[in-house]
Image (cartoon, rainbow, N blue to C red; front, top):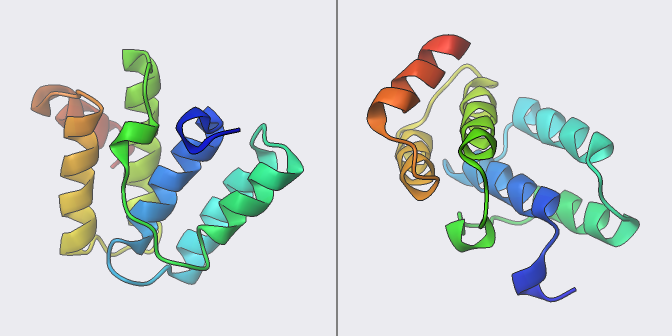
Length: 121
């Protein structure tokens, strides 16, 4: 499978891992949350191994890896990213900036984002 044709689940995990790395370190709570997601995701062994590697070395947010999503799927990714960002009970400035970038990349307007944020607080 080429990089461009990456498994969609793997691409979403990549986004969440990039968010966890945004402040320069993956906290234990973030690592645990992402590891649990990886363990239940529909991934083959090689993709699962690759997903786990995202927690070992800093990766950047690459929105071009997530394409063709429905609005509901994009909102789900954003909702999960918000929860992940707050799992360590500290929203770093870098994480907040990445959430804005993610929201914009997913085409979620500010009103919808506020609605999603309110639903998880």
